[in-house]
Length: 227
Ligand code: FES
Image (cartoon, rainbow, N blue to C red; front, top):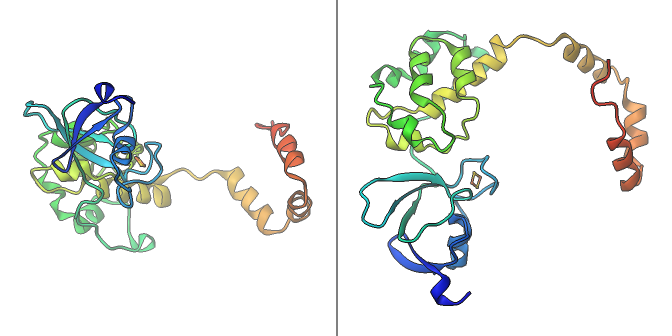
């Protein structure tokens, strides 16, 4: 691409000219960076590519996922591939799904100021302040629900003036919910028992030796929601 069609961006303070259609991640590679850290799925799911940036002379600090955000002229970029957030050690099977567990593992929870900085920082547009308020009330099921789309990028924690670890509290609640609170599915329990009893061994063995195309045909012709 001719130089006049490129736009200037700054990566760790150094100026580069890059095509305007690229994501931050692609622009960094265009500029010659090999992304050994801060890059995973490239699809907006893994949370590895958290990035903070400013544009031009604007004081406002913005956030984004490098794999999803397209570059703008005069973008000043810094990657935050990991943040030194505290993560409590626990064995899930020894915990109880209670407010006491949250406070025992994350006593800092009660320091939340409800300022909403975490919500503004979330690239998933989750209302992090809201789920922290629910956590302070011990409503584990609601925290699990409201934090469900968290990709653990850590930007909420990086920006929090109260030094909370919102995303680690969220995943603790999702784990507690999954193990202790979520309703059990009877048909799943029965199907697992059938599998363990070998009811599908023969069918699976027959499938393993099928040619690729035949496997695809059978997959596409399967009954999706049997009555
Ligand atoms: S690389 Fe996985 S979210 Fe961006």
